[in-house]
Image 1 (cartoon, one colour):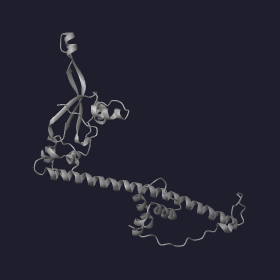
Image 2 (cartoon, rainbow, N blue to C red):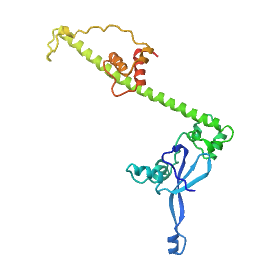
Image 3 (spheres, rainbow, N blue to C red):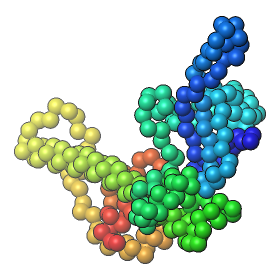
Image 4 (cartoon, helix red, strand yellow):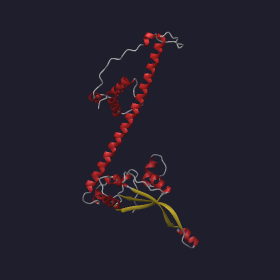
Length: 272
């Protein structure tokens, strides 16, 4: 059967592995008067919940679909070894070839018996289970749709956790930047106060003063109640940056997203 991996498809729906294969060299055998075998690297491709559709291709043969897409964009030919490079490199290094996605062993909603049953159907990851549909999903039998839904819910929850973790990291970075800005402001204020005290004590300052000593007096800022959580939620990015600047003395560096600005503002206002 002529089956080729579609580079536009979700790789979680394709099982790929590389191996060495002994192949009879007919021309060399005929010339030598005996069988001559050579080893070639091949790529085995199968599909989850589809035990009928399997194919093997020379690893360094051109993969037609990926090559077609590559050449349309002015790129070179693409072989199976290049298209599935992670698996190929693992094969060359003698290590376990990686699967694309989360292994079934990480899914808490699966029993060990169900994991073995799924692996027998060439389903090795939660991602592959979640991607099943149509005839492939029917291979799971009764309860298959529920398994698919559980797999999708697991992936959605994991993605949500990753978003929260990423946001926390961005907020932490912004807070670190703001703390540094605050430290520099405090150092400048201490230096100005020290200069004022030295001038009052009659000490000669070698560096010419741009302002009189009296001008170095700083007024206490008027106390302003911090915004509420609702008020912060209603702010746009510019308003959030302005509030952060007023509280810390400098605007956030870089281009933090809206959620990061909201979280940082709430941290400064000490509201949830």
